[in-house]
Image 1: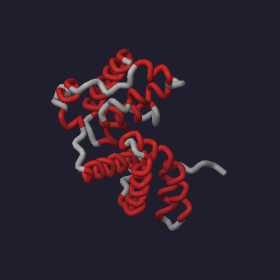
Image 2: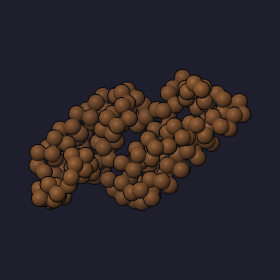
Image 3: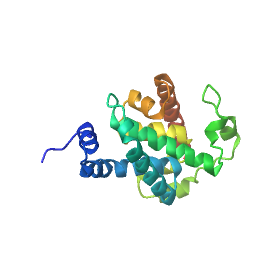
Image 4: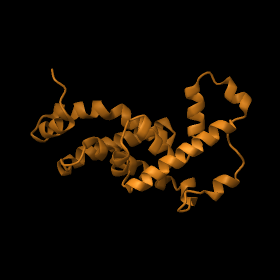
Length: 187
């Protein structure tokens, strides 16, 4: 049985094939959950938000612009639902203290929250070390790196999914890489 494209599945669903929507959800459930989990950093809340994302997709699929990529649209919804969730928690992300140059005076003045080198050494894999260091980045930086290297989005797709200008995404990617290198060398 040939694998249907996202666009074909959407068309089939809109014509009354309920199974097509199930296939779309199965195709994107893990990547969306993973994306949200990296943004929110809480598995239970990520599950709830993931469910909300797919409810919104189901409600708005008739409005989907077929000139755009479904994957980009879906990740854009995931980002928006995650941001809505964070706003409801009334948490102020460190990225709010970031100026136009990407400098964050608050983060730079805090005590280094990174684990001590002996704790890092105890961790058994490079992936765990990288995850630990990634968690010290602001959500904006983590999201760009995650979409770029985990989901293999192009910079243009990331810009569309996050609703940001292309040059902002490229700049944020560059700053995230610099910060990641700095955090890794300090650990």
